[in-house]
Length: 275
Image (cartoon, rainbow, N blue to C red; front, side, top):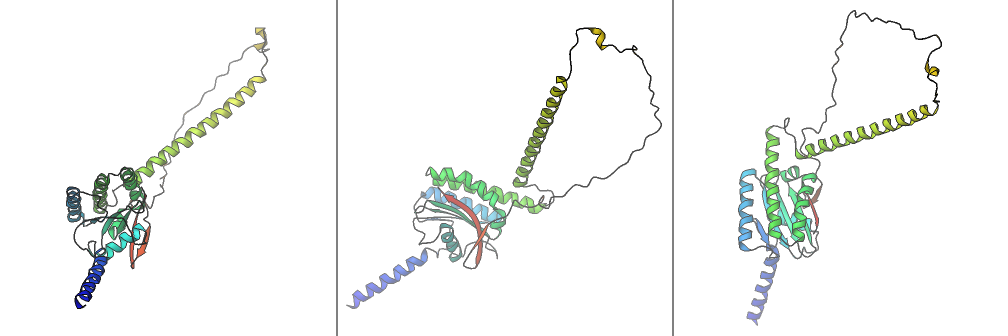
């Protein structure tokens, strides 16, 4: 009877500790609960994530699961991040990519400086690249693409920090391109309107002209008189005026804003969607 009780007690302890380990692992970068990666793939993702951490101080994590225990995928990832004590520095700089096979939901969850680096604009760009690959079931390829983007934007952010006044982000370049296209479009529309109105008035003016078969109708009654006009150039005066350009307060900013949510008293950002 005592042996049976001891076995039951040990079983309860193992079950309890097993439930804790879901959020209690503090080492590694790949936590493949859904079994989506081979050992070689997990090793490659780990190696590249460690290199990014050493270079940029960004803790990059991969989490897969088939059950989020009633939480949204991003909430599950945030709780995993907090309970595992992940992230570098006081602000816990890091990013988690979670793939929830149960809900076919994938989310990028950012923390600390990761929120500032991976803004809404850049999260959307990464997601647009990764989502089609996830839909094809090529999970390692999707995460490889994700890592490439993470490394790129971390590098660009370092360039921005080195010289904020001179740096022009990808977001700003695209906004400028859109503005140029918009200005050209407005100019073309205006030119077409002016040309159309001119043609209408010209046609109306021609309707009032009567044709003559006799050439004498075009001659003046008293013949043709010539008059000579002379313009005397005296002097010139040039006035200079400085044109003040409107400065865009966001010219030297990093991308756009980042959406955030709170979990366990800590702020997170990110985004993603169904695949």
